Amino acid sequence: MDSSLADFTGEALIIPALQSRDMVGVIAELSAAFGNCAGNWNVSELNRLAHERESQMSTAMDFGAAFPHVRSFVCPHLQFALGRAPEPIEWGRPGSLRIEFVFLNAIPADDTGGYLKLVSAMARLGRHPALREQLRWAAGTAEILKVLARIPIRK
Image 1 (tube, rainbow, N blue to C red):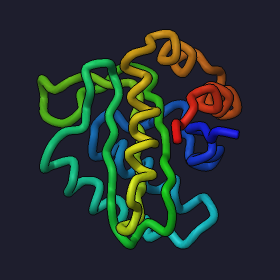
Image 2: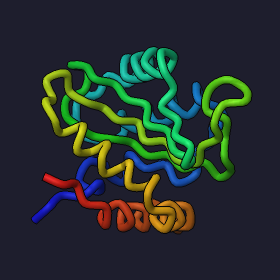
Image 3: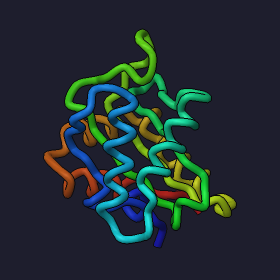
């Protein structure tokens, strides 16, 4: 059986209504979510590295999603946190792209290809507006996970 996006996240890693209204706050909020799930996550280092990487080049896409990521030994396994903004927010400097969904990807330093398959599945959101609508209107964490379970990760 093929895996799906839902296999790389969990209820503790999904924030259906982000409180933060800027990139710095959203990354901090999503980084903190990793501390709520199983594993040995160094939340402060994950947060620092995600900000550092995002400051080098924005991961915001024109279809309303951003994909900040950390590739480091601070990440014990491939996983992501997902946050949904109640209203679109500017991702980065004023005038930047506006986003509704943020996928904070945590990638082990020795990951050789799993992340590329994961990001390829996430990119389907750009090609399938219906998937974005389903994520936008999902009532809560459980429904968001059901939508993510319908997005396969190709082998």
